[in-house]
Image (tube, rainbow, N blue to C red; front, side, top):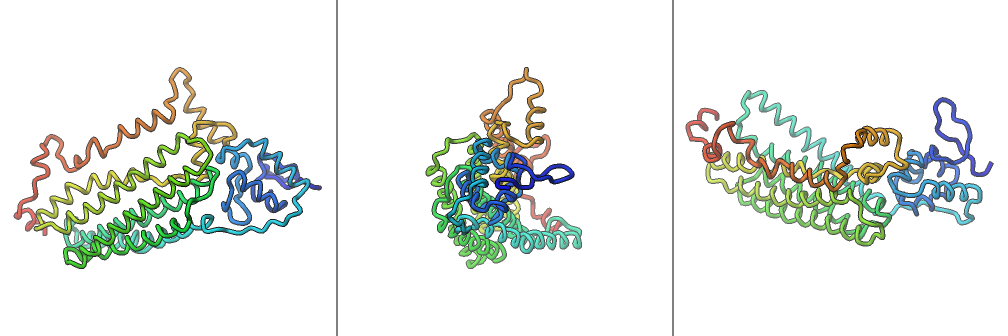
Length: 376
């Protein structure tokens, strides 16, 4: 029977018409030419050739399309398939995100988590938290996690999801691929710089890392901005959060380089500890503001403020949140402003190193040589 496929229902799986519970993968399995329709609505390379297993209602919600119009188009295609054969071909823009994800996982499992666990083991065996000899390896591990794990995932998610919920294509995928190469080169150079500082080779690798990482992230932001500009879709409130995270991504990159050269040029152990104590907390706070944008499978539905066509759980959460109608819903604008005002980076900064009732001068004064000798 043309246009009829199996649908997901509790218990039995009877045959039925294409409806909001039917998954994208089921539609494509029965009618491969329907891929053209899904691509028009923003699917592109998601789910590879067979498509994702999400229901059509969820697909319509996250891509902000009319569910009834989508169902009409799919039913018409299923009843009268196009005579033109559809051949699925992936472009660089469709699969580039996988390189970022795979590299991020590889970095995390090696110089990330494994190296971090090794550092913790050395601290535990020596029963001493203050070991200056471990600072280079600890900071090399930290940089690999921030830029190799978080950074690569931020970029991969953005390249994959942002064009799809803006109903456009990624601007210059070749340049996006270049950012991948630059990021890997920068991370590798920074690891070497941390381990070799303060030698001249270490400083040279630090300069190289600073240059290529800043170029990669600046180019990444430019690609996403140009992708947004070529879209005909109106701007959405959630885009503020995305570009806000990208701004802090750039700021963090500069702060990371300042942090490195402050350590590498320290004239003594006391000055080294003083500079780490002064800069480490703001740098960590800044890193917390770089939040990977969610995949297009959820971001628009959860951040746009609408509940039509959303999954039941999402509608329930929104209903509970607005249970008391006497309290006005803050909305994305107020939520965004509140997030900026409450950021600890601006309010506390290096305050993590202040005693409860102390003064800044006393708290940030370098330790005496006697303390260093006692702890080393």
